[in-house]
Length: 290
Image (cartoon, rainbow, N blue to C red; front, side, top):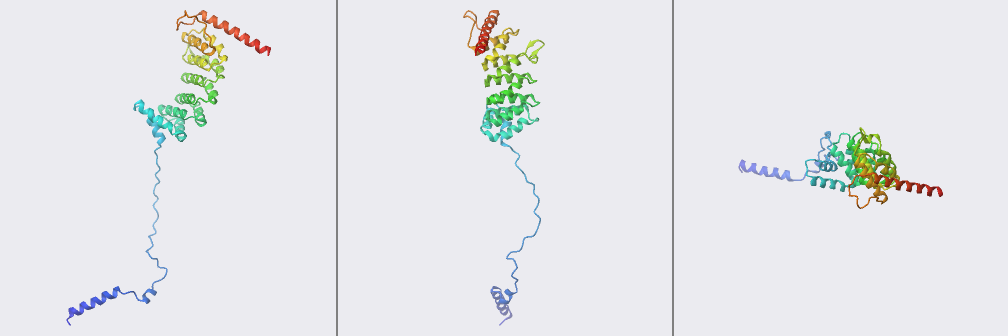
């Protein structure tokens, strides 16, 4: 047999030996605590930064609604969607409303959205805005409270009739007129002739808002102020008082011959003064006889 054949036969026996099972003695030599797999390398877990989402969907809607570059229709659509979120939007809206660094537009839109959403929480949030140093925040608070229309807001709105900003005072009068609480007639009457509502002796526009609010409130407690306003030097005020008196009492002393828009004259003043004097005296007599 040649050397090459012997080498081939030896290689075949070697291969068969590799395929055969390990001898029992060899298996006994393997320790029982050897893991089936190699243990992982014990490396420290890297301290990865936790990235939180910074996008607030409510804030996004608010900023879109307040975006002056958008068409009005688009802005209104975002505003309506914002209001539709309801109470879930309140935390973000209140945060913007209280933020002294928020833009005027964002602050205003937030106040109006809070007012549209409504509820006691919204009312309380807006009432806190009445004490803000920002005029836009106080103005938005008044507007939002008018939207809610809750008579619980009447007292804070009455205090707003004394606000330093005339626009806020006028808005507060409008809000009180819209809410229609008769008790407001007293505060409105007292605010009508405040020195702050005149400039160099001339009546400021806020007084017309107060007169109109007295007419809307419809309380007899405001008639004294309205009758007195008939003699006001400002023709717009006297005419507003004349309309408000008719609105409150349902009375009309002008004849058909007087054209609409005719300025208040002496006949008007005398007619209303006489009627009110008799009515007030009659009320006093009735109260004394009870």
